[in-house]
Image (cartoon, rainbow, N blue to C red):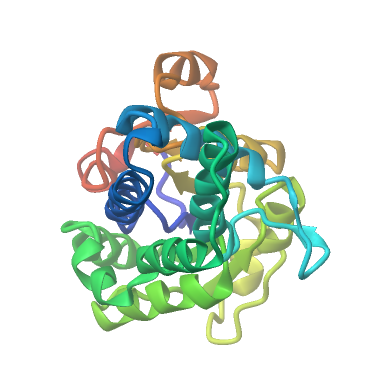
Length: 265
């Protein structure tokens, strides 16, 4: 326990704002479209979903031929994964994929980024937690992995809900260097910048241990892990929890434990 001020570096998706189910309806719509289009040549819906998950995970590291860079978590990856799922099903069924059907599936995929959902996706206790931490004199940053075109719209929804940050960093991927850079940020409106810079009390908060916590621990942070099962961790949660460095990372069940268990930090 410490009375010193702290710097909290927040993840966004599935930490401050629900995200995983934004993709559920487009996947279901894509399944329905493929079944309707291919009829009895389409596999069972469960097989279509499993194939889409396999393709989408693989495409994270594949190169986007239009940019020459890996897709990672860019906006184009998911809609393209629906198209690639359809193409693979057609290939296996010896059916010709049509450009018109591919365009329809791409359109379905982009519905995952409907910004009208973002306000309602904000975690219900997020504002109370932020108000509490600011009341403690703590400094709040955001470090989100994803496409800036999408993530900044989510940031706007948070800000409109009274949740704001001293600094915002949107990155293609998270690593120790990113967290080291955040330690060195100079915040113009914070007079006690030098005080924060000397602190060892930097915390990374997120729902993904591998992405949000592990690289931050390598950069000298402490971790606050709030597990949420996503498409990337289905069936792996027990193994992930076994890997948690319990000397450097605390596991919370929900955001509001940042208030009720603050004295443990």
